[in-house]
Image (cartoon, rainbow, N blue to C red; front, side, top):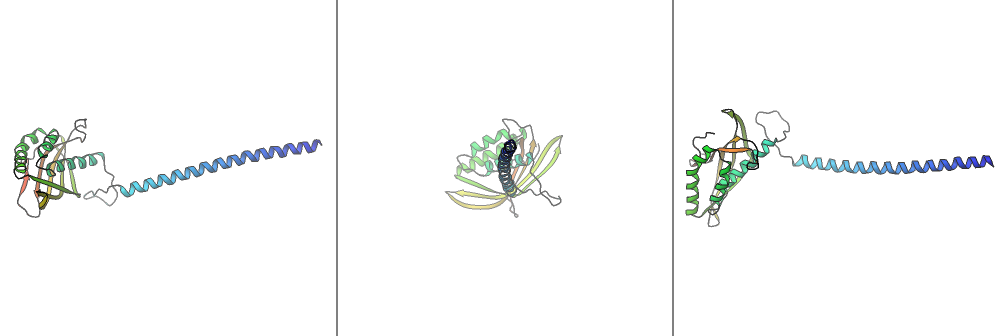
Length: 219
């Protein structure tokens, strides 16, 4: 009887041990499955990010993938803000857009641009003209230089400029915008970290007409 009791105790302990091991196996399996699902979701997000990541072409560089820097993104946003404010407008809002952008001008740009924009605002109001600029971001080029100890970006962006009268497009021409940007400290007043030192928008493909708000082009 003592032998049977001891055997029963051993079997009982074995059953308990097996039960504990079974619980551990179930828990570990659940953990593995959960981790696998998380990894699968992470891989999916990484794949989506990679396929949507913008492509930057670096002139003269070897073949490869280049990630945009913070300056690249800020410059693109700033250039879009400027070119749209100057070229996409109605005769009613151009003056307001110009005044909003003045806080992003260098002192030289403020001086040289005033006459140009006053005439543009007056002309657009006289014939009730509107304008629409459609940029081609694949043509965006940025050149970094130093001038008088200051960091400068010379930027070129092409696109299509449409003139609208009475709700109809009366002219659509290819244009090239050239901007000179000076790097400054990012602040609440200037989240871009750049000031506009000069701006030019001219027709391309041999057209002679050009718009130039700062002929001297100095910073």
